[in-house]
Structures are given as C-alpha cells and as structure tokens.
Length: 398
Image (cartoon, rainbow, N blue to C red; front, side, top):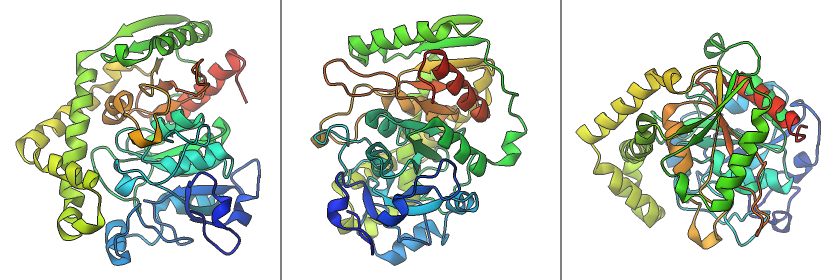
C-alpha cells in the first residue's frame, strides 16, 4: 500500500510499497543525483517509518535497528539519491510474504524477501532499490521480476541500520532496471578498505558454466537455454570450460540453511517468545528450527563456511567468471510463497559477488529466470564491468 501526501492506494498496483511519495518517484534523472530510490522495509530511514514487514511496536523496531538512518541510505543520499519510499519485505526478511504481486504476472510471486524492491523496479515506479540477502533475497526476486539483482561480496557494504538476522550471512543488495545504476550505487556504497584488493578491469581469461548438484532440478528448457547462452558468451573469452558440482561448494547449501536459522534464532528468537501473537507461524517455525541447531551444530556450520571462504579463490579464481542458475523455475504461483533460494544459498555462504541478469525467458509463459554471473570475492566492480561487456557482446547492452 502506498500512503503519503501525494499518493493514493490505487497508485500501488502491485502492493510493492509500504509508504512513499509519488511526486518523488516521478523524477527520472540519468545519474544518482536526484534519482528516486526504494528502500526495503528492514532498512532504517529518517524519511519514512520502518516496520520490518510486521505489526511489532515501534519501540521494538527501534531496538532492532538501533540507527536512526542506515549508513547505506546516508551514503546514497550523499551521492544525490532521494528516498521515494519503503518497499514491502517478507516478515523480518524471512519467508512469510507480504501482499506484493509480480508485475509481470499478478498471479505469481515476485520472490522474497526483497519482494517490494523487485516489484517496484519491474513496475517502473523507481529504477533502483535497496534490498538485502541472507539466502537468496536479492537475486531470486530480481530473476523472477526480470530486472538486475546484485549481491556484493560479503562485507562490501555497511550494514549499520539494517535489520540483523544472520551476522555470518547478511548482505545488502541492489535491484535495478539498468546495470549502470547498480554500478553507480556500488561506487557510492563501497567500503574503500575492501576495494584495495580489486583487480584492474580486463575481461577474465575464462568463462565457466557451473552445473550445481541440483542441476537436474531445472526444467529441461532452462538447462538447454543456459548452456546455449554460455556458448554464445564464450566467444568473448580466451578459454571456456564446464564445471560439474564441487563437493565443498555444494556442502555450503546445507550449511547456509543451518547458519541462517541458527543465528536468526539467536538474534531474533526472542520476538517469537515475547511477541508471539504479532509474528507468523512461519517465523515461529523458523525460530524453532534454528534453536535446534544451537551449540555444536551451529558452530560447526559456521566454521565450515569460514573454511571454504578462506579458500574461495581456489574454487572461483580471480581470472574466471562463472555462469550458473539463479532460480529453480520461473516465478511460482502467489499462493506457493516466495520461491526456493536453492541456487543462491551456496554463493551467499561463500561471500562472492553475484549478479542476476534478465537474459532468459521461458517459452511457454514468457517469464524470466535469471541466470547469475559470479566472480571471486572482492571482484565486484570488475564483475559489473565484465557483465556490461558480456551483454554488449551478445547485443543486449544498454
């Protein structure tokens, strides 16, 4: 629902917004200066209240966020962006969806938990929106809604003022209709300490098609089209190879689920106890699952993730860009929930930058399904520049 002095509920055709200002959204500059942005409703702003997709008392929300305004919002404002409103999130950035529908097919889910951010961009309300990702909450909605979704390297963007759900996994994300706006926002948000290790811009030597252990989950058409895309893109690289599932990377999928649930139970579990009547059964069940991992199980999963992260360049070297699925299907029916983050979990755990690109569409439905490009941790700027070059190579550039 949209509210505000210049908006009416009927303005919000896809229930993408919690609140906002339609007059601000009307501006369409080509740079961040004056650009209206959407902000996921788990990120604190001074412009609009934050509800985290709940009916929790405002005092509780303030305790969860601590900051009056998130650093990421302040950074984008400093670069000239203007907050147009707060976009709908699944409850507490988990799995209970709001009322948002997919602008490409209103009987289908926009994904989650950054559902409103993806829908607002796909609907053309704004061209850039802030999101978050702990499992697949940026990449999946962007793929379902046919827009760009960027999950940066773990730790690249400041998280002060963003709802904490899992300290090991939480990452800010960006969703946009144009790759150039993601690049502009990345420049404004980047942690300069992390940038010092970035490689100079040049096309990586090798393109890798990575087939996860769940490759067979994909519809046959999707597998075929991803392979065809890989072969088209390979013409721009010195080398091309296809990589079958690597056990250490595949193990991260289960570890991510354990850590996500376990850390969430530790950080937010008290809400299910003290405010149980104000949170959903879905949230309470996730907390219960997480409590079951407390202690040795959770500690082992965190250590397993960190061990693979420390060796990440052995798996995804700096001179390779990987192409792999982002979603298991096109957007599911709205009643099925926010969709499966299966193809995002391991990359979130690994902490590498991922970019969902709106290149493939299902023949029967006409709906998009990703895929995503991945590079080594810290190669965020280069990934975005490489993606632009790859899109131009196949005639899809901006």
